[in-house]
Length: 548
Image (cartoon, rainbow, N blue to C red; front, side, top):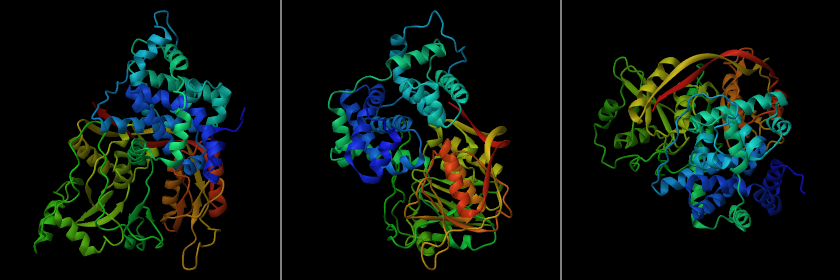
């Protein structure tokens, strides 16, 4: 019996590209993925395509996932969910997601149905409910009941004590029971149903086909599913953020600047953006810009659309964009730097005119990324259902200069409520949370990558690799990025944090948990001199309230 863990197998594949460790990993987890696919699409042929597409995604994401140290199985279930959703959209099917049920006691009851009866009723909704849980809650359920691990093994995987793992599993199952529509089931019956029937053997030969497809991705159906899901999964990471270079040179602290060194050609100005439909059916996306000649009075029409009324802090400019927008971009010569026909563009309204301020290539624009980019609310500060926070919403955004976080968040909620089929509000709460407290002064010890470039900090776990992009901001911005990678806030108590300019590259993405957080923080300390102390403190969060 091979004793290598899933993460070790994935790391070997990412490092060497060898087929053997990946094929072993596929064989080990094929039943998990295929069972989830069947539950969601109820079509055995489509489920096989989805299963292969998930392992295509795993092969493509092998390096970043292995580097994060996160358990592989929860990621596979999450990826299966995205691929299945994309497949269902293509087939014009709609899924109804069960709303939260009333609280119930955790003990099993005499009137509970059998595990088989309970699971048959839960199966269509189980994966949707799992996707709504937080990452650590989902991991606790998958490890304990899908993989049948002991509490000690769950604790080791999550990097917590056995007592903490037991509590995490109990709370996670209770949350799942509340979201899966099991009003008449006890928590014990729900756990028994999952343990007994969630994993079923995949068809013979599917593991071999999935491993082969992951390496070659030659089957068109599989490749299409994988491609569609890749776009959908992009919500979890801000891939590329660019802010006007002039902002970085001012004394005022600004949003993080992320850019590529000029070793790659810029995206062509005519490149078409990718517009992803929401989870529910929506009209086909409109083109980013309506083609029409821009007359000599183009600026008057542009200003009329991109202005804010008195008392207005923010507004959205939906697709399709007017042709005068392209004229404005051409005048600023932005098209040669980056393709801002997609992603999120923020214009700042100052006095009587809006000016382009910053852009991110995050695509599609989601509620999570809009809060991050428009209101400077990091994802760890947002308390919102994992599925709802990914809802896409395309367009430009105009923000009044000097508007504060509370003002922008409230205005953003109003815009979302108008654009989406349900009302959304955000309530600020103060809750006790685990945090890391940063101390000291930034003293970089690393040398520049090349002559003429500034020293750059690298966020990594085991060994840094050659970066293909860099970010710039200040110490506070670096700590926000670090907190987002761990989904845990880093409280900034460094000396003079907003004056020192910092350059960095993020090679861990997100999902860093357990003992891997200590490794990541130690690597940052070695490069910067900043130290980190774990603590528990009252922190402000934004809690989403959705009226569905």
